[in-house]
Length: 234
Image 1: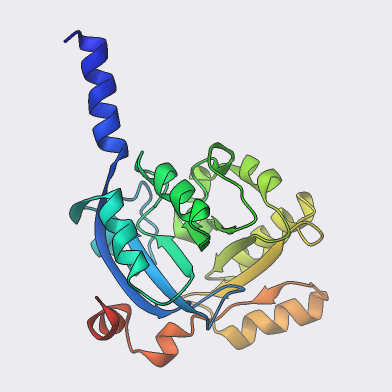
Image 2: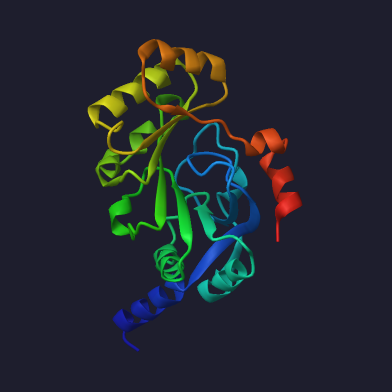
């Protein structure tokens, strides 16, 4: 076999497998689908290192699974809403195949992506909600953002700003205004360590800024994400 054919064969093998940290049934904890019963597939690997990350265990490791086996796992649960999360779910080559298969099977899909990978290379079906982060300065990762992604968002999608201080709020407000996001898509401001939700609400109301504040309800229901997984994991 030639080297070129070997590379193609290896690529096909990679595309038909994914490295999975865990999969579990729960409720969506944030965003416009907040509160809806959802089946989560958490993929391994992330190219960013945000200081506030609460899923550092997904940076590496996990179990390699064939896409057909992942689809069989999904088919055994009751819900038609599937969330692909991470880590960063769009890093692995096989994710594109999994997304297309889920769309063909009629599932609704939330794709939680960190904003550093262009989403226009992936399916943009009406069945898919892209939940796109724009990392604020306090994350330490704002320079990694591909802001071209904002022009690919539709009304069905959402863009999230994780806000830790006043500077993050001002940064986020400028991005929303510069890219005219209020008319384009759903906007969610979520408070993180260093700022209380009440203070963020005050800033939004004073500015008359028509964005949604997002609280992580799974952290209200469960003390931690790991506790949630212990209860709900397959």
